[in-house]
Length: 386
Image (tube, rainbow, N blue to C red; front, side, top):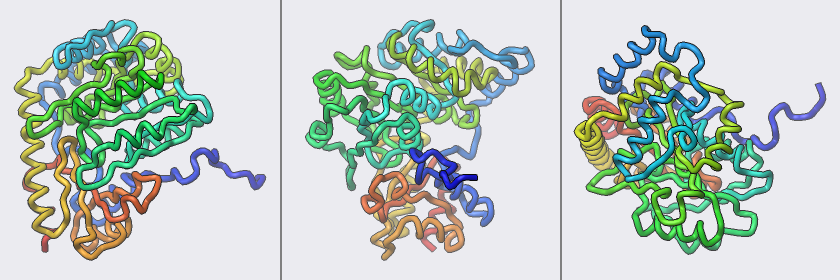
């Protein structure tokens, strides 16, 4: 073969994800896996049984409609109206995807031309970098800094250039747990309108906002209905992450653009699970409240345990994750720390440095997932303390 690299140079540096590496370490060492964000218990039994009924009844075992089964698209519309007062057309403004990851990739491929700039909060979930790169876009990070990880809106304004096409927002934010306030959302919306930008919002943790806070969809704010691609999924809210059911809600023209690329990625996915998630979205308010309160209790349990073990803990406002700083432990490199942690303590975590373009910005930050059983969190904290 010629000396030409096999991997597209756009994807240089985007090898095996940190989640695969750390989960493999958990398997080989038997360590408690607080690295990857998946629960260690399944979601509601009634929803699992709904999937079984769909399988046995032949619903979704063949290709579902490209836009998603009508029952789920209608349920998504009802969910958006119920929680946020938003109205969408289930036939032209809702698209079901193979999780939020596919939705983000499809949006980037659809909406970016090579050389277009995309501003995203740093640290960012690793699929953002890959999706932007595959589309030929240019990442422009807006760094969120400890201890509160609030966005610098003046820096955001300064980062916008004539080449800026799109803002990629994530709130509640993974990995920091920051939740954008209404004032911050309003300022971002006004800036997007002023500079004629498209905004793609990753809202997969929308039902995990703690301490009485609220999730505000950017698409609900003035001027944003026709320039926002809103993305969410069922995995985090219903604890069925393996089902990979996500969705996009957007104005018909934006949705048509995203659908054009999505159809050549997976085409369709998760047929029987779509029917089950349609039922899940109609669960009573008590489910969503209890789910949030349970995760808040687990957040506090692990945060207290990590503090007792000597970590500097940045208590999150939302999501599944706690960001910590290991400098107080005398450690200087989060990646080396996380690679050694399974053997040292029997716990797996993820280094936040991999979520930054500039690894020095998160050199001593480590992320722990608290979407686990309480006894598992207690044992992990005890191991780290010991």
